[in-house]
Structure formats: structure tokens, C-alpha cells
Figure (cartoon, helix red, strand yellow):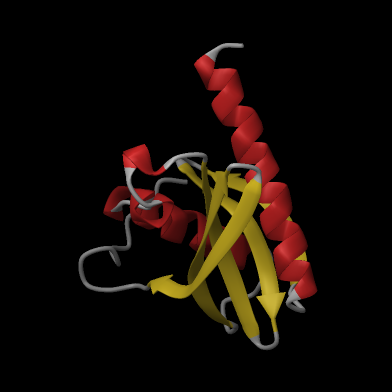
Length: 133
């Protein structure tokens, strides 16, 4: 199997496990794999009064570092841009939102899930009005 198709299967597996985890935690899943311009959001969910935009990272080994560290400032900016688009399309601009990361590690058949709430937020560096829709 090609490395890219293996990575895609692992990512799909991780996203499904993240959805199951969030649902068990009481989240309502609103959308999956939402795309807007160059940005994509793996999972959009609601937890109470929060609209949560969730990035999922899955790995089998620690050789490339911690998966949550793979959410680079560039990825954050694209995610924020896509979130703005989603909020505008669904008239949710008045709803509080946050950006979470779910890191999954699959090692020796055991799956661990690390959910980081408020993993990043809008700030002067990534809050410019130019969106890549």
C-alpha cells in the first residue's frame, strides 16, 4: 500500500474515533471535513453554548513528534478562516466558539486520545481580515 493511502486511512480512522469520543462526551456533531478555500475543519461540534472547531491528528509512532504539535500557525490560520466561513454560512456569528485539537496515538494496538480544549485562539498574529475563501 502506498504511504499516502496508508496515511489517509489512518487519518479517516482517527477522525471517526474522535467523533465517537466527542459524542460520548456529550458533543453534538454538526459537520465533518468542512472546506472553505484553503482551509478545512475536521469536525465541527457543539458543546453546550460553544461552537467547537476540531482538528484531529493521528499517529502510530512518536518518531515525528507529538501529533498536537503538527497544528502549525499556518494550519491554525486556515482553520480560523474556514470557521469564519462556516459561521457566516450558518448565521452563527453570535455564538461563542473555540478551537480544539484531538491527538490520537495508536501504539501496539492501544489507542490513546488527548483532547486539548482551546488549543489556540484568535490573536493579533492570526486575526487578519483577509480570508482565503
